[in-house]
Image (cartoon, rainbow, N blue to C red; front, side, top):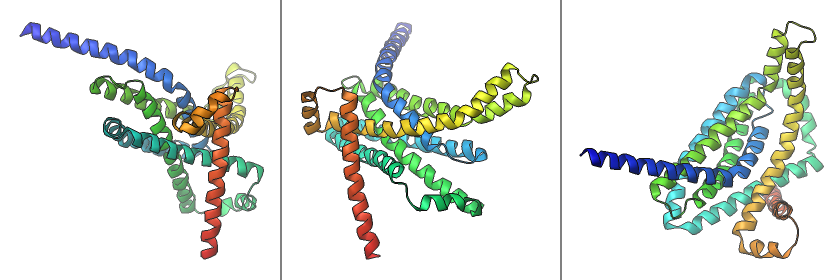
Length: 293
């Protein structure tokens, strides 16, 4: 009886060792997409009133966690019984990410005429209208997170294909938790950077003290960090989409090796081109439906 118990402990220890090794491999494979996820979500979570930043970020984090709860079991089932569906989902998600990135670039080059007037009338919004606008942004952030989460889960799952199902579940779940807790934890630190800076300035007793110096840097750096993350997040959307197209669409996969340029440039170009094609199609449909109305 005792020997059987120790054999069970040995088996558990062996499984955990395998899980640790596979988790490291999966973490390395998903490191790039996790970096993209951080940039995109930091950009999505910014732009709210200071008092609303953490509540909004918490709402997005809960939505992200729910995304993982939905995605994980579906990914395991599809991987086992209908693997082609995973590729279809990835490509559709890539088209959405490419569209979002292309739309941001288009709006930067050709800003909408109503953007200026919206900024002027912002102060006339009621609290209910502001909260409603927040809900729209939160939904958009959660939808983007869902697509990025699918990509993260699929990449992590690809590193443990052929392993026992228990190991697959544990490894991919670990990566999913890291993708939620780690990414949104860092995002929370970024969006509250200015508040931390103000606190350091307040507790600094010396006019030229080190705390005040660091506080001023944090306060002044936040707008620049957010602006940089907006740019990085847009590029990340296109790169993630381009990576999906190049790796999962045979035409681009076979075309790319013939072109002797770095893969990151290939993926960006493919993502950008397809993003603008989707943007043109969506814009056309919007005009058609607006005329019918």
